[in-house]
Image (cartoon, rainbow, N blue to C red):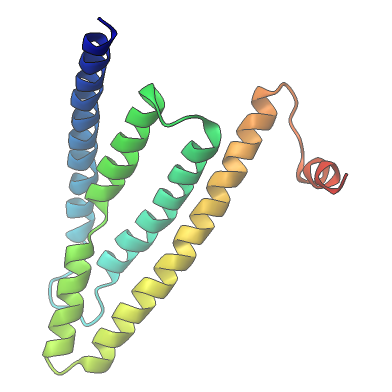
Length: 163
């Protein structure tokens, strides 16, 4: 009887997971499309795509680190991670547009501009993701300190770490 119950629970969670990703993806894509209208199609530097991808890298780093530090990846915790991370941020960011914009510049005699866009997007994206992970860790630590009944300051945290 346990196997049937486990199978039903897994199927139920899979349906909710897919729904969370779907709804989140619709929301994230809607934001990206709206922001994309702010950039004219004939620009030398695709600044809006870069801004979207860099903010997405930061938010995803922050979100995933926060979730990693605040509980197991099960139940509602998993649904929120999937809905916000895979769904919203996955729909919001756009790797395919980034590659297409890079390729267009590289193949249309704008090699230096295309390479600058490619390299700067990847390098700054890594920095943004790292900053997001740092921010998510700080948020989780702060949440833990508040949930524990006491708010620890940065100085208190450093003092207890030194002991």
